[in-house]
Image 1 (spheres, helix red, strand yellow):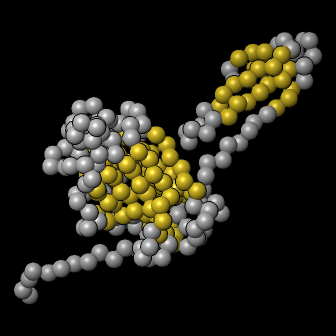
Image 2 (image 1 turned 90 degrees about the horizontal axis):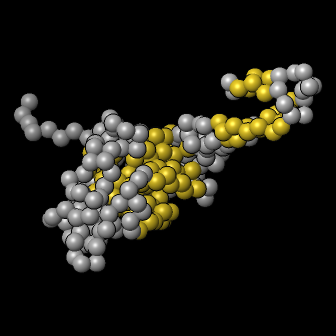
Length: 231
């Protein structure tokens, strides 16, 4: 046989619930759009410029995707990343959630569009512009108006600080997921005690009438307040 050879990876539709945290790298089924100016970058740790970008991924020790806005980037440049096709037909209340990091004096705009017609047309479902502080921020977008198979287009735009400096504009994303919304469960209990009784609750002993509360911390940040009512 005589080369060169061309191989094409066929990507099946992913089925929600879907999560991409980029810790295993950027899947071949994600597309770096060729019609934009530059590409999104897979990274861990901090970015190459001070006073912009995250210092780590959302959970610590993993990867994230970001746009590097140092030279040769100029204001108005854009980088576009397109998700795989994701089937949301099995979700009762579909929702997009992800983490964004938009820190720096030159931060531009982060847009997310959705398509449910095989990427023929796109509709904007999320946009945020400007410095949002030096932390990861949780973002959620309802997909209740959509069904079937969808794809997402993520666009990062380069801007400047008002004086022509663009390199304080690194925008990052992490933990891109499509699923059901987190639903908080409210816990409540009423326990009746006589004067001689005592009860051990959450490691503490209670023997007097009163109302006591404790916060139950959940891994998905959906905390609940439990109340113990002793009468």
